[in-house]
Length: 112
Length: 116
Image (cartoon, rainbow over all chains, first blue to last red; front, side):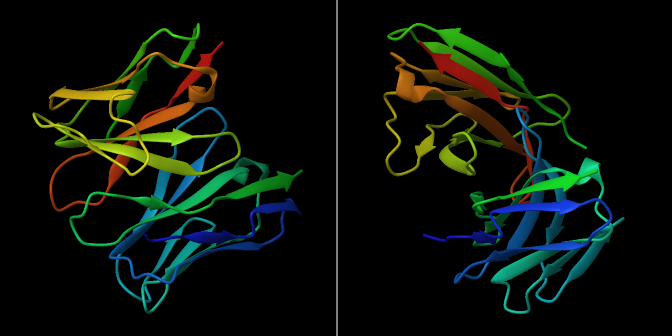
């Protein structure tokens, strides 16, 4: 069973600060995705990373896939209240294997 | 991006009744759909994988007779919670995958089930 542990579990910071969320596993993943979920809604895909060491940027969000494809990080620069939400990483173990294993989640609150 | 809908968005039912939740891919054909369950303040847990025209594959610990899944077409999968009880109250989310060789799943908005 592949487990994805996210840290921190909860994070509350002031608007304008930077933050990093981590997603770690002892298993190798063929790809890893990051989602953001608002209360009462389904997760929305932010990014997919597939290559070890890959870095992707989405405006103020920077995603990195570990060299060994066992971990990933999400860095947010100058956080805004609109960034508030539940951030979930999710990975697939084998290419073409359909199942997504979700991380434990990080609940982020940005205080205006 | 691809759109997945769920219906209903909320349902409240009495204990012992059955509830059907629909998941539709609106602008693409989904060879595979997935059903997840999410308890408050927790992450998503995969319940089953639904392939069009074949029986669903259930995750360990998920009762297939309790959670009936039908994937009758490339755009529709249904989850029926049979003889629902209060412990079945949860947020149920479906996702759809466009085709083999892609890992991307598009998620529906979820269905909040409350069993009284």
